[in-house]
View 1 (cartoon, rainbow, N blue to C red):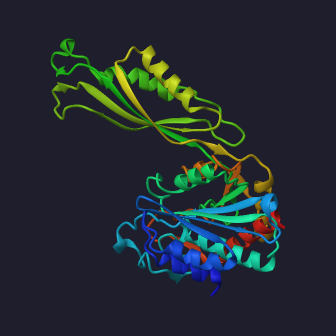
View 2: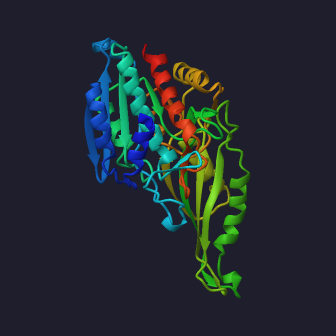
View 3: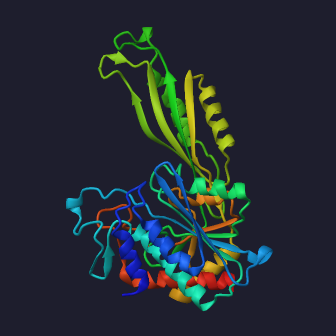
Amino acid sequence: MSKTLALTEELIALSSVTPEDKGCQQRLIALLEPLGFVCETIRSGDVTNLWAKRTGAAGNGATAQPLLVFAGHTDVVPTGPIEQWHSLPFVPTRRDGKLYGRGAADMKTSIAAMVVAVEEFTSAHPGHKGSIGFLITSDEEGPATDGTVVVCNELKKRGEQIDYCLVGEPTSVNLLGDMSKNGRRGSMSGKLTIRGVQGHIAYPQLAKNPIHLAAPALADLVEEHWDAGNEYYLPTSWQMSNIHGGAGASNVIPGEVVIDFNFRFSTASTVDGLQQRVHAILDRHKLEYSLKWTVNGLPFLTPRGVLSDALSDAIRAETGLETELSTTGGTSDGRFIAQICPQVIEFGPPNASIHKIDEHIELRFVEPLKNIYRRLLENLLI
């Protein structure tokens, strides 16, 4: 059995349902410290974070740059009904050419591949230039308030400069290497309350139906062209997720209607700009309303450059594939890292089974994933 597969199985066996780490990071520390990494555990609330850094023999003072950081998370989502799994979710099981277990794809294989890749690289190139870092959290699948963002804020206070960051999220689609992510859309939610006047449904002249009042404004919000996107992003999308109005009786006009909505927005739009345009539409309809905004994450983008080229070259050399740069999907911890690092790329195994019953990774992808990470190190630090 390869070291990568053995470590992956060892990590899967630790039931680190968010925000628990269950000893995953201690196992990583035990492997990284002998390689010359200085490891620091940063706890926040119930969350365990790891910041580890190693400077090559050629790295000294100002020459310790560039700093390449591998980032990821040890927490996993809940299993769902265990009886629906064909094998226990925290008992790594190999069958039919696949490794099954919660976290197999998201993202314990990536973490194992990162560690073994660094072990091989530092053994072969002890005098490499620059530095290597690990930023690992147990709060990516949860609220993400005590995890990567806390470490990034601490590094910012210290003046720590990260030059390149590879996040091991599962980005591939059909084959390992067919897609990597060079950015993610921002996410901003709104809770809109439109007020009317409650009354008997038989006497509408004595009431004011907020659902009726809301409908034309909602139609305008749906039809609004927010932006055209750009080379890397689809146009910004506004979507309603919930709408609630009514007193639970068929003969009562409600006094208010509450609408939950969300923007998935690109770098072609801004938080302030989107908020101002929403308020302008609502005001144009002369609605009596309140609106609470929540910014879940800002968009980030790494244009084609040193990091994306180095990763593309590594993928091509290992798999023969030309990786597609994409910004699709949900948010990731890359949004926090991008605040202190100019180049952030996400790359990992196929994502078709993540968060599902019988999560798995094809065994044929495990060693190539490690090799791609090692080749990335070679491309950037030799």
